Length: 120
Image 1: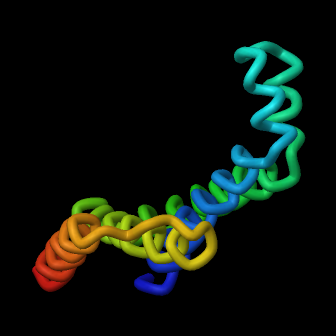
Image 2 (image 1 turned 135 degrees about the vertical axis):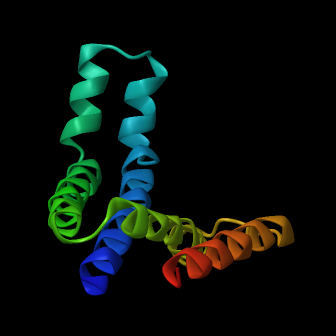
């Protein structure tokens, strides 16, 4: 079951990165500059990266349902916190986002909490 939980974390973190790439695409930025109107929404939702990101979220939801069918939510849900760590690393590695000492410290605190809860 741990593998399914970790798959969910990986899928949701990757979805964040892919969605960010889609929402940063020049055609999406241009479309949204005119306001949140139907043509802009069509551009957003038909952008390939946005569609892939949403599909990853949908897949992650299915995996999460499988997890919840077998594991107490009070045990499984703290692992969602690992998504902060994975997403931060992916954003740094693939998007060139800055990772400050404060962000690292906060992320380490989240990881420590996940470890404590997982051992309970």
